[in-house]
Image (cartoon, rainbow, N blue to C red; front, side):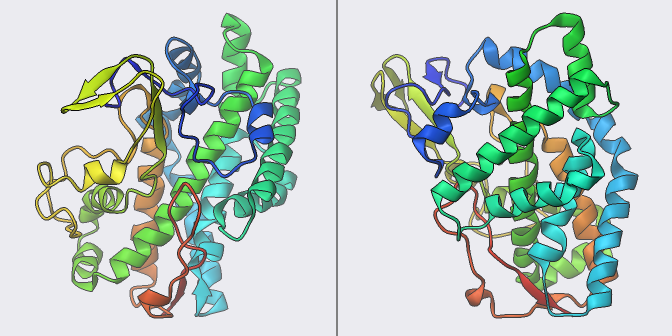
Length: 346
């Protein structure tokens, strides 16, 4: 379905099932994000950032990611348990890495983290999220302007420099790309850290095997991505023509929500799909989407998760939940699944 040419990703289409809890006026003021673009516009914008998110570039970030993770785990150990892993690790690590990747000045990082925290909690209203997005768009507008005036050697700076040569993007479109990277590179990663740790702690035998053999972590990450499918309902489309998929007629103008979690729990693709099995041959899953809209930052997510999980469980091997699993505060009314806190101790 996600590769069907007669399905549109644009949220301006009548019938598009808009799920983002943001006031319509806030969305109307935004430049169209990459996830809501169709071909050929989507390909033009995606080409601008793909060279910055290759496996080679992401692997080069490993030493710095490791350093940031170590610093925050050391701070956790010095503080002593119990702590909230969301605040101590899952929010600050991705936000700092993203700031450095985009070339955010060091003095602005606290402001950026404040924005990040407001977008991952479920105790904020749609109006609060709309206000936060407007503030961030204003900040990113100024950040892009500063890099257009004084070139910098960072992701945004290189995108801007390339754009000087080919002129394919307008200023506001580069701002929209920066916003998309923040949304895709922070919110999902933060929630995967806390949910992944929580799930592994609830499967101690598999976790123990992973701690004994860290080479299992990469496969465990793929299984956690499949099992959790935290962006389960994030894929919306509108039919631009009548189409039939597996005997179901979808009429022109009707909207659909492609449930990634359903695909990732399909018994035809995965044996015992409702069970976590970090040893399974995972094959393909749709946690990062599929087709032209597949997440461009998937390599970065995988590397950050690998470093966080391996380092956390190596340095704090006795880590455990500080409250019963059934008392964990799951997020509500948000597009990306997650937790409002993950209390842990050791």
